[in-house]
Length: 75
Image (cartoon, rainbow, N blue to C red):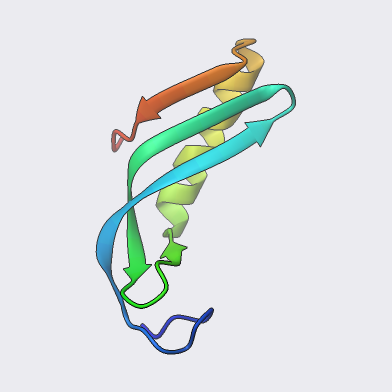
């Protein structure tokens, strides 16, 4: 797909690092599958991946963790 940010590059399969904040918790997930613009580096996640990341962030925050860094593992 053509990148909606730069409108110049095409996206290619790649990996991203996603940082989420929930209350006092900061969650960093590395190696998330994404479509990445070859021109500007903008990252796009699919719906299934996004839902999984948001659930992980909620679980981590409810557990009382303040900072969590992990590698992405597909369910």
